[in-house]
Image 1 (cartoon, rainbow, N blue to C red):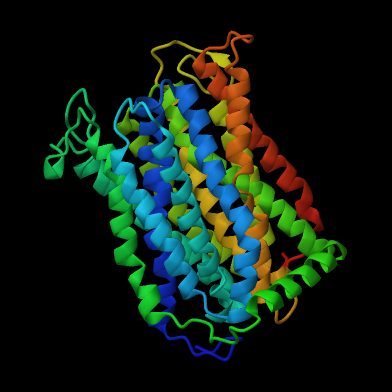
Image 2 (cartoon, rainbow, N blue to C red):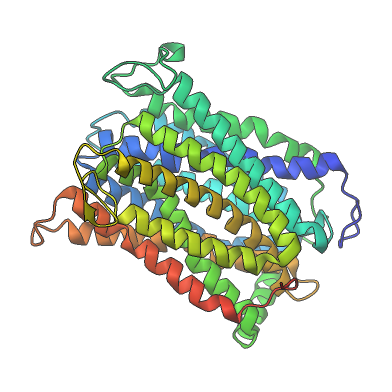
Length: 457
């Protein structure tokens, strides 16, 4: 299949690139959202509110590390050409960090090691995805980018779903019953009392990634090496010129700011969804796992369908609709407790809060899958001809490089409302602590009318 770079990428190379999303998604599904994160808040930290605060701090520091290093590393990669060496180095950091999560035992006194491992996991896994995304425009023509991006995100969500079912069905067991989601004893002799199934989600994620990232390394063509001498100087020079010109390019600049806000909000929503459910609704690992399965399944469908809508009506249509759905989902989450839904009181024995939260999870999964896939193609519509790699570098700088904003905002808000002066319970502090996510979505939505899309309805 011919591409703009002159390369001919066969079907095996395309699938190899798509399998990166399959390989990486369990880090988000298992570690950040539905298994290890809630376990950390419920069993490792002193209480759920403190766990949410520390989790936001660790994931925020990981994003901050990306922010501090991405301009330099992205500029060097743009000037030198190949992406795979960077993906390999960053993947190694991520894999080792995930493996180290096994040592996060319940009631660990010194949390420093665990928090460092979480931060490095975010840094390695998220930053590797930045360079993988930069390979996309050279694989297919522009007319097929929406479908490719949506299919890859959908495949990633399926990978997250499969990995979640395996961990919850065979490994992670509730201490009270000793059984997994399927009612089985954990495999490999994992001890439910020591929460070894939850802790094993880290090493499992590392092994999954190593196995399934191989097709990308083996079959997907990389950019040719252009230069090594002076690559740092040339890359930084081009980056500086673009940054000076960028404020005058209204659509491009607005997209980078808007996507920074709504992607950061989505990142924080994923990170804290399971922790919020554990702390406010008192959900068990099994219930959080079902929530995750629903979100992953709808995410796969949403990404796939969003890619088709993207191809027909343009990526901005998909992004706008997705943000509106995510705002609604945030309101559903914040307004739901065991005693109320939409801020209206109800009988404490009512199953409605759980049902509402499951529905919100499905909507978050579907809209999240669609918005992430279409954002990649909307970026391509903003970038001047011949500057695709540089554009993805700025996309990383504005989005991945600022992933610390949402988590740190939630951490700060949770810590603020946990202050004894407010006399709030830990559950109320958690509810108030996630309100910055809603504000970030709204701010991102406000900027969308200023962004052009090559394909408009």
